[in-house]
Length: 354
Image 1 (cartoon, one colour):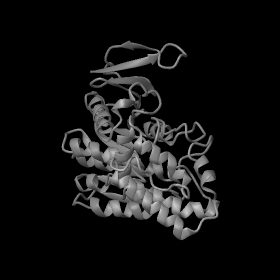
Image 2: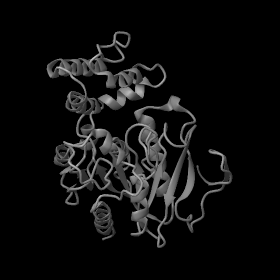
Image 3: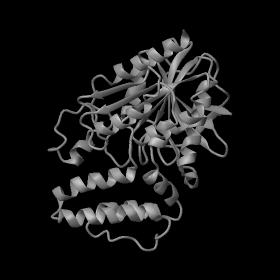
């Protein structure tokens, strides 16, 4: 079911396929390709030196075409926090698997499968791959932003399995994504254009209601003249090919998956997160206090949305400048992130072995 690959040419996508990885495990940062039902999932596995029974983390990338390293063509830079965190955890004896979800990185072969359930299927495939590896102990699902939503949906199907460890939510949403879009634009647009705020709010509310009614009304778009930044979102929602997944992502209630989860969970927020506030993490944590004493809540003071180090004032710094820090060369992870994640994993794994 699972195959590994090693690049043998500089041409993207050209690989030499060979059999299932042996029990000794791959070298650090080895590329693998997982075979699903009618699709392939390109990924990177990090195996620590002493891997016998080691905990592993399954990474889930955030919104848009964000790849396994947590890089996006929509943002400049090649310093993804997903790769940074995976490599830092490996040095602490924690393995990981991170993959290009469909529509990102090298996973662009068949975009017709784009939907929430396919994201879940990819995550489950990756989970099964890890659970069948002899060196793998407990498996933890870690998602950033929208990725936390996907991680929790996968957790809903695997949380009672022997290898399951817990969920780690980095800036996971507590509300529908459409609500975040409207909230952020209501805050940012008056700063960059002369707009009557009452008319702006009315236009944004009309846009939200139109999205919630879709696919009905696709041929009758709301007036977007005052809120031009949402035009691309509307066009994505009514696109005949991929509109379904755009609509699903905008309107799904992330708390449904939180309520369905009954295991250890670490909820992390960044104090300087422009997109998902600490109050959202509080709302998620309030629901996961489900009797499991290993649920944890932590706010990192100088962390942005991607959990990179950020010390600038969010309110006074242009959003574009803040976003450039997400993958900026040389920018480290936020202080405390690796400690928080690794300590939670060690605590839960240690309890599980008792």
